[in-house]
Amino acid sequence: MSSTYKLVCAHCASPMRIRTSEGTHIFLRVAYLQCKNEACGWSVRAQFEMTHEMSPSGMPNPTVRLPVATVAQRRQAMKSTDDQPDLLDQLDMEVLNA
Image 1 (spheres, one colour):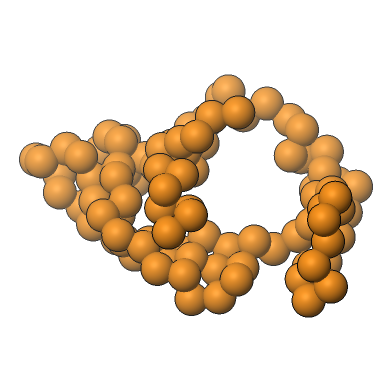
Image 2 (tube, one colour; image 1 turned 90 degrees about the vertical axis):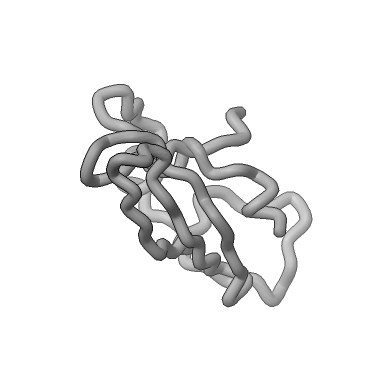
């Protein structure tokens, strides 16, 4: 499994980096992104949200309650996305764990 996510600038399609992030809720993280292309320099605020449980935890916490993903959502997660950039593929794991 990759430890990074792709974040692609919507303007110039260059990679983006996460400058900083903060957890606002157990299921929500706010991140501040910046395009790595100095000529572009676009910066943006983003949110990464956990919305559905794809499979149950082997060590469930009874206070964690997310809706179970539908069959269609699980099928979509299994599809290859080689035809489009994965917007989360460049995100550093340490940002997620911070």
